[in-house]
Image: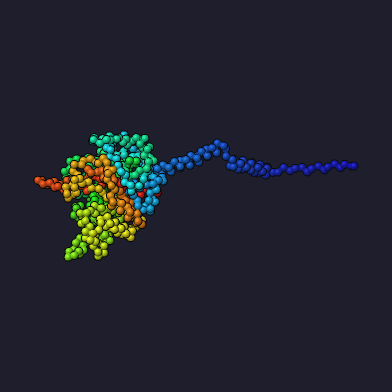
Length: 538
């Protein structure tokens, strides 16, 4: 085969210099852009670690800051926090309604926002232990003990003497005593989880009491101003109630006024309730620096004669009121034979109910006037409709009167607005006769050691049974047991200023000196209201 030679390739013409440069530039730019894109999609390991650490640190910072904010934020005024766990609670006030108890399945822990250094506080306690616990009081409470409780003397009312509980106190007497170390870690640990019947306890001598004095409070009338009337001893107002298994918070006037802000606290009942009402005014007065910011709305001065008062606390836009009614039902008159005689309409509520309506907190009581003497032994005294009973037993009449009161409460009180308390009967301590037959208590300067032989009053039992049938939640504020010990707390002969050259044989062993035992009743009322407010807010 003949092979022809391949023709030569045409010579390659060189591109102009301009195009060669442009091509080289484009190629270089393409390579640079490609490398930058590759770098943009890659993160070096070191940068990854820094990035992760920054994110983690930020999350931890936010987490701890949130915890700090929560711990510093108060749930109620005065920078106080409370936390809850499940348990049973009655605070020594017996809730006689299922509805009322439902909210009490709480176990609560107090934490004061202002931490104070624990101090070694000692008290000597005479053996005034409860010989018989009132069977009807079944409430239990769990409290963590710290500076918010009374054992360390914290939260003193501003009207106190400034006495700090950082000192050691002792009361020398003939009674056997035991020491409470308020700062003991072991004691605090034991109290943290213990259940407590608040009505079962003892009276502890405490130099940091009273929470006010006759000189600091102008609201105590003559009948209760024992120091002003010349009573020489002072131990009777230096005792505080200490439940066996827990502590109750010391009354704090500022916190109580915050709880009452914009509200009406109304006491309705006999002169024993006036005793408690005057105590409440004095306790709250400690938070008010300007006395002109507290006044009686009608310009009345507190006396035994006038029965209705309303004191306004201007800075808190609240009122603390008292309305007298001896029996809660209507005192009337009816014709028996040829005479018109005083009667008690046990089927008709007291005519002053228009004043009670609209209250935010109602504290009722009656018992003191249901006596053989004041009810004329039930002869031609109790009236129902047009019928005046020739004779009716006082217990039967008392029950019917309370049923009348309970019906009024159920019909006219809105339980979503108003909290209703019924305070149990306060004991009298006449020895050697009754008030009008030589009964006395002047010699008593110390609490009783034992009350085991004293029966629970029938009137309290009747009140409990009636309240159980009510649809409105009512709390029985049981002060009977703790008050039984305090034979030393009555005015006795110091219920009036002594007259020269004359002496009265009548002693008052029913009412109470102020400062004194009614202050404790109000501390229990404060305890309940404080807990209820925290429960509502959570």
